[in-house]
Image (cartoon, rainbow, N blue to C red; front, side, top):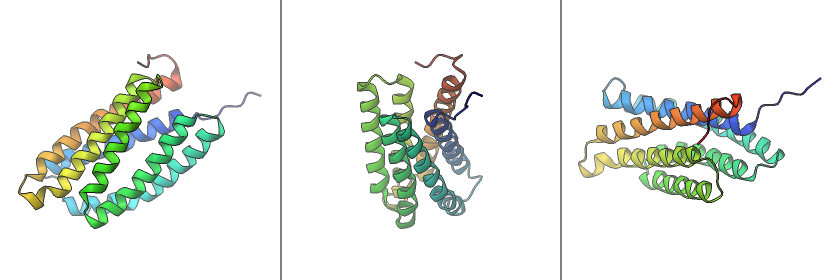
Length: 179
């Protein structure tokens, strides 16, 4: 009997795709004034802690199969998701900017180790989501229109969701190219 296991990289990429797509749609809903920002941020805080725990499981699974990059990346994503709950609670833009910078650093490492370029693009889009969320959180303090930043993190969230989901499907079916 053959053993079928879920590749933690594929599962993690699929979950990253879904999460970033969710944030992208959230940004577009905020821009269109379809949803109240305070209520949506409350719902986000409720789901981020369980998601961070799921990524801790993916971190363990990736480490168990010997994928050091996925182990480090998923561990960081778990910490990042948990950190967002704290950052949203205190309204600090700096936590989001720091997380965005770390995602850019992961993108550089991915590029340097020869990982698929789509992974580096996914990480850069994710970094831009965090940076535009930081600007969204701070927009009221300096007179900027927060809805512009909501639209921007929405666009990059949808793009990151598409890239993450495509990579997960391409890696799991092995019928689509991963660039």
